[in-house]
Length: 230
Image 1 (tube, rainbow, N blue to C red):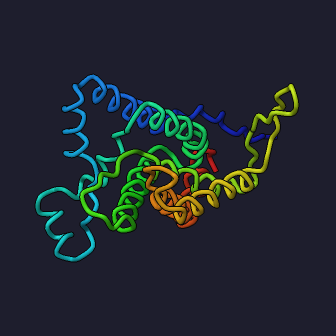
Image 2: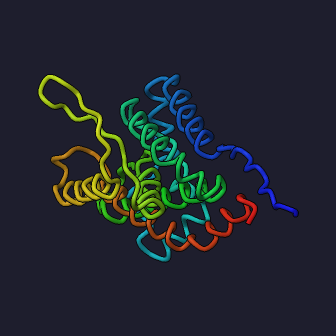
């Protein structure tokens, strides 16, 4: 009698999330080492400027002078270390499990395209010209959206203060992410009183991530079957 033995699954090497983590961190460190005038110049040179990309002529000009690349380069600039830290934490929480399912190349593509789309949404929503949109929040929001689409039944750990003690509980991911999405909508319509945050970028990135994951389900399933030897 011959018995088929399944090949041992090789441990997957996750590279896209660590690469993005390092790129975001290194970009911030290099900018922070510059004098204030130099940091401002970098922001103006590489950040996404509002007041454009609202017509065919503006898009033609952006492709001609290369300024369309600001939609991507602005993702790697951050206002301060708190801005960076928040994005890095969410990148690890949602990026690593998503990469295990999607693969590194697809996750990197999602981050860049979702971030560019979210920056474009911010440019169109802000209306006022000559403002600068920076940060990876929109790109990270696309990872959150993809995570929800890929793991609708997942649970996330949360530390809740209960009297004098802290209690670790596991809450359905769709509940926490749904609350987060509702907050983004509320802040987007709350106006500038909530600070200089491009809330429309978060919403656009989240929607992009959900759609990207849903449209990629077939190719993701094929990838998982190949990796498992089916």
